[in-house]
Image 1 (cartoon, rainbow, N blue to C red):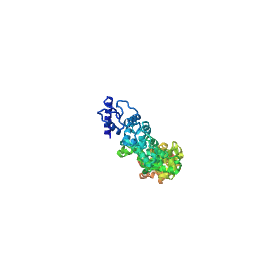
Image 2 (image 1 turned 45 degrees about the horizontal axis):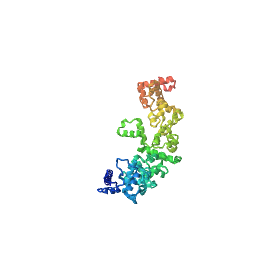
Image 3 (image 1 turned 90 degrees about the horizontal axis):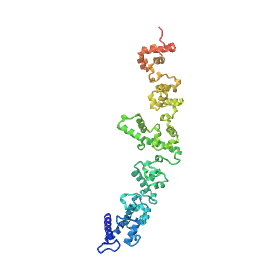
Image 4 (image 1 turned 135 degrees about the vertical axis):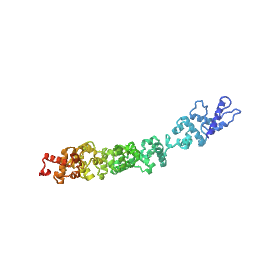
Length: 475
């Protein structure tokens, strides 16, 4: 049809030029003796042909339409059944696009009425149908037009198609990331009107196979978190998402995991913390970032912004202590009772060991390294001495004495004297094996052997005026 239209337009322009030069007349008027009426007839099949030369300023489309009907049909309105012909509708709609300069997607029913094309719009039931008929190659969807056809979104099929189009073709993201603003920006706010402005309902209808829940959309309905069961369900979901969900990982976490695969040697301690957090579903690993990444800041705010309070309130059976989550508040360990409680929990509940067996790595592994560093100068001995004052634990009783402790001869002497008391032997009868097995090989080295170690012990006892039992017997 395009070639026929071009040929008719060319012929008609020639007829107009001939009439202007006195060699002929316009279509519908008296023709010269040698003029053929074919151009005028041809234009009836292609009504969008210009009625004026291209170098003249065109009149409004409505005036041109009336002039066309008057010249070709001797009437000012369309003849009966004129708009029933698809070719006529298509030609005039395309001309309307040219005249308004809006583009096919920008036409409204008001544009049709203002330019005398009301019947073309009415016959097809609206501006969208008229435009889609004229431009089928563009694949225009109703919601791309300024106004969606009335009652269009009452159909579930139409709503699903619109939401999937927005998510997959425009947003190119996870359906859970869609927002109310996206629905408005892409002309499908009518879908939300049907679902009472609930984005979750619209997304769930379009993607039922995903099983998306309310809290996954970032904001649950009013009163949702009033239920303790709902809060627990959300917390359990966060634990699953943060352990396995790639879509919710931050840029730092994604980079750390990529580095783990490519070159793990360059990973920093912070990178390892991020990786371990992602690998684990343990609630002890939860932090404020996990709530933010899953859009559940409101749940966190209910408990004063404390991940520990969330876990302790919703998972009391876990028995998790505050220091296990590494999120104790400022000044928490400034109180002696809190420090003692943490150390006793580590010794008696977590490790079930003797306080004397505590080492710095055990504190760090159980997230109490900061406590040991900030309050005990990284000395496990000082920590257990404060937690268990009734046991009178001496530094040399620890599985590992404090750094530099045995550099002092007095400390070495007291340690060997204590060992003699423990073994029930006089100091002079201690052997190198006794001292080594007692964990004091460092004492032997620094004292120059067993003799030096025993001499230091006797000297220490003399200075302290301890019972004669520990001294060497007289000859």
